[in-house]
Length: 357
Image 1: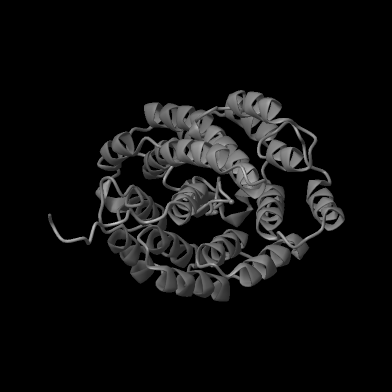
Image 2: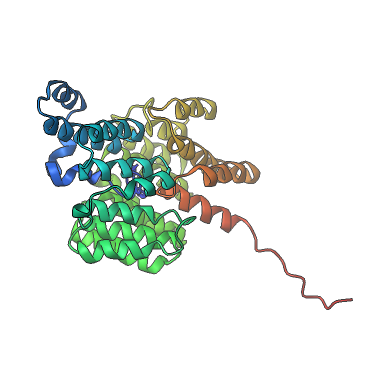
C-alpha cells in the first residue's frame, strides 16, 4: 500500500502511491476533488488546444497530478517543469514538482526546489504537506513529526493531515501515536482508504494480525478507494492469514483480481501471488513499468521476499528484503515493513557478560 498509498501508506505514499501516504494534491485547490475523474487522453487534448499560457499551466498541472496518482512521477515531473517554463512563479506547479521529486526518492533535489515556492503559498495545505513529506527522509531529519505537526495545526479538519502525521510517527517508532492519528483521519473521512491501509499495516507491525486482517477485509468489502487499494489489501491479507486454507486464499485473490490488468503495475504483484506469474516474469514487468523508478523494483523485492518468508526460505527472504530496504522510497509502507520484518528476524547481538580473564 503510490499513495498512500500509504501503505499507503502506505501512500505516502508517494503520490499515493500509494497506496501510499499522500496524493498528488497540488491540483486539488485549483480543480476540486473531481480532478481524479479527468481522463488523461482528454486533458492531453486540452493541453494541445490551450490558448493562453495560464490555461496551459492549469492543464499541465492537472495532467501531472493524474500522472502522480497513477504512479508515473517521471511524466509528472516533465509536466511540472513545462508549466514552470511558462510561469516560473506558479506555486501549484512548483509544489507539484517537489511532490514528484519526493515520489522519485530525490529528497535532496526536492528540498532544494522547495526553496523556490513563493512565500505567498507557504501556508497552503499542499506546501505544508510537501514539507511534512520531506521530513520523512530520516537520513536528513531526526524528528519527522515536527513539520507534520504544523500541517495538522493549520488544517485540523483535513483527514489527510492526520494520515500523513501518523505515517511520520510510525516511521519514527511512535506507534501508539501513529494509530491515534490514523483513527482520527478515518473519523474525519471514513472513506480514506489510504489511512485504513496504513492502520492495517501498523496493526501488523504491532503484531496484532487479527486487527490487521479485519481492516484488510474492510477495505476489500468497501466500495471506496482505487482498484490498486484492493490489490495491496488482498496481498497483505494473503501474507498474514497463514490460517487460511489454499481454497480460501485463492478465492480472496481472485475477488481482488477481477477487472485488474496483470501487465500493469501493481497488478503483476497479485498475479504473482496467484501463481500466474513467475518471479522472473514479475521482475521483467517491474523493470519495464512506465516511469520505472525505485517504486516497482522496491515492491518487487519486498513482496517476493515476503513470499519467500512464508515458504520458510529464510535466506531468500532476507536477501530480497534487504534489497527492498535499500531501494524503497521512505514514503512507501514497504520501507517501514522491510525494516521491521528484518529487525524481527534478526536476533539481538549477544553481549559477553563473562568476567575478563
